[in-house]
Image (cartoon, rainbow, N blue to C red; front, top):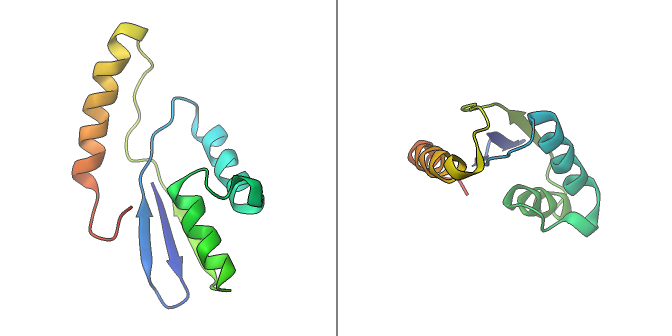
Length: 96
């Protein structure tokens, strides 16, 4: 999960999933924040670019909500569906 906060304490949450490790996903997010070519890669990058265009300073706090082992391909769909339901239930007002 990423929480983006602005200097006036406005806050938005981004909740996503990855099959890769956190470091790889984090690096892809950093690229999308710094390279305009990747501006529309994620909801979070769209929001960050919106803040950049209006010269609003921001801070991002990262956290991992839940981890899971990788399973065989036939079971992955079931695990994904369960995790997605969990993530949807934990979203709060103001999340995107």
